[in-house]
Image (cartoon, rainbow over all chains, first blue to last red; front, side, top):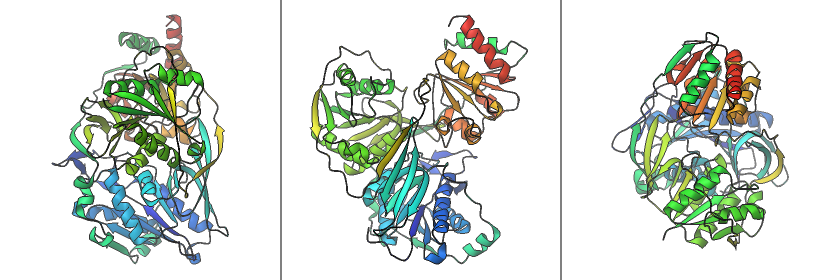
Length: 275
Length: 315
């Protein structure tokens, strides 16, 4: 990536529309891709957008020349995630859409996003959620950092920026199962944030009205310099061969405690050879 | 014969169960060699040798581990090249998946995560959409980079301990990286890791801040303690204990859910458990729809009674 502009931070937030986890989710079609009929802004991406908004507010607000761009890729409906982000507070949006993108695995998705970010950047900071709530592979942020040769700070539970003579520096905290880490990196960098980092705000009426005037740039693969064969099913390095719904779990025995439920529980466990 | 490279990290005093599973799975696919990122004691290395591994690749400097993910990815890429491996097996933690992700890009190879079964032709089975779908997939480009869920394969018996030959790999860490500047260890519970545990006792809102009865039952069963998001958000237990869509996905032999209503986000993290037991005061709790054994009752009387009964039977 090129030198970032000196007159403010340009932050990209990657957002994704996902099937609403409240509804049944399914895979269908000859290419075994996800059906996104009931789609929403991924809950986990709201934390990334909130982190961007808080960084801008901490460092002088929009008047200091900072800008937040919400970015997504996917079919026409995918733009809903960008629109929602604009209502919450992002300044502008980008939507990469192309039929050839359908069926992209993590490697093809990260390839397309890398080309897109190079095209619409440069960015000082790229923020993502900790994983999409559908594919849950969490591969894309790491692959994007690798492709863009950026420092990777994933699963940040806190995030601070400090301006310095030689550019911005970021500090973050990561919580693992058995230890916590503190991380430092120069900008530009890619950061994924967890659901512990903040409490995302909701769009208000003013934000919803303001969003109507904000720009969404719609781009195709040709615009960002990629061939159809580099992405989608053809450009993927993995292939889904079969997908079947697992048989739903059925309800077993249900008892009401009459003073001996603990003992009956142990009887059940013994019967299942679980002791 | 196919060379299988198994990546191990965070070496303890001896091989963890999930590490023994990876080595055992590797042996069914070809000749196993190991890439080891961190420092290790001789007993740990001998343990690797006891699985018939003749060679261990190690970085020639500690810098690979001071850099978040990227350093280990560079090292592992070079270890794949040096060993000529066609299959790379890793664990399934977030960090392992990210290392796999970057190695995949560096080697132009497909990556499949959350693998629960692997056929001889390398068709990998994974549970998708939080366990509601079973998906078969294959790597079509490059070597097969696979992260394997714990408890997916049986670990075989080890042979006699023997020191494997060490091969040092030069590692050139990229310039723009995130550095680890500090590390604080969390208190150790003495209980198994959630991802590896055979038994999990998990609590939610109904626990009302008191995990004592759950810990006692978990200890009687040799299990781990987990929680719903309501319980971790309330600060009653470490965030790392969270099971569900934004926490961990677990599939133990036995999952005991106490005081958790079982909203879809919680089910997403545990519905592939082999046997599910649920205790809740509310007979209409959705968790009962997926429980093999449900008890409508007060967890503060049912759990201690069960713990006492297990101890009484000397189990």
